Length: 371
Image (cartoon, rainbow, N blue to C red; front, side, top):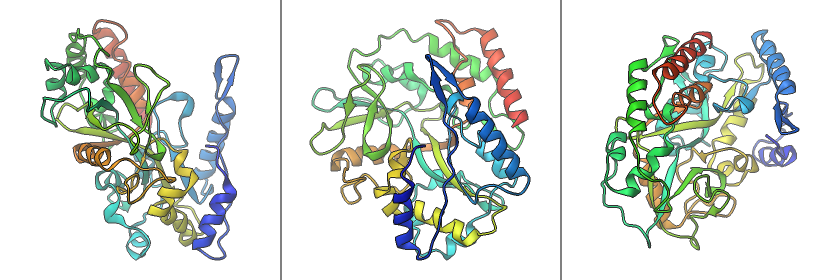
């Protein structure tokens, strides 16, 4: 990500006197004549992974999580990297810190960064899809939460409209069994959901719901009907009913979109933890420009409220209350990985094809076996 390194040095230097930090940024994907070119980025990432396996590499990693091939981070499968003992266990450092409000960091999201050795991955941002409905125009009759099946079979357009935008990998909660390096779902389960999905013949967009993804700054960027317009949840904006796309078990699946970790090979663990400690602070998540460049909401649960504006902006009290209620319905958390993209291609047309599902399922098996 492009970032003003000098500003970071100034802010962290103000907290830890005599602190010196050097940045190393991964090469970016290039776009040439309408086509993507990841050659330079792939070479850089391969070289860096080789350094890490040789006991070298940066002290601290701040890594993007995504299923999109052109933007994958250094660790496409963060849980596997953690289980392969690439990162420093942090429990002792966290417990000794008087600067981290750990109880105010989204618990289910933070828990995903732990294994039997303790906390190693430190989530920084997360996201889940939402539909927004202006309360002045629309009134939701259904009771939240609900299951995906209840959404797709509902007679209420506000409820069944979002289902057409289902992210398949989210539908199952965590689709990967990292202990077995295998899918956590069966091919039959995936095909059955695809069959259910294609039976939905409801029109989409008549209620003019706004499909959005959480982004930095407490703003919500529209990526559904009328794409390109912005929606603000601030005081001068509208008051919205928020409806997520619920998963099969009746909760919300949150995706970790950015995390930090410390290289187990570091020769400066205390200094490296200072960076992580800073990134976990409410102050950094409110004010540091690095969070505006991350995709997702900061893990500190007060950020974007009236009491903790992000970059001077915050949700209205009513909208933040609505968002917090939906966040409380999260019952599954996963790191966004390349598997997401594979699962989401289980349907490639108006009908559910057993051949297509099988193809994607086998690809998913191969990916996890090689991760």
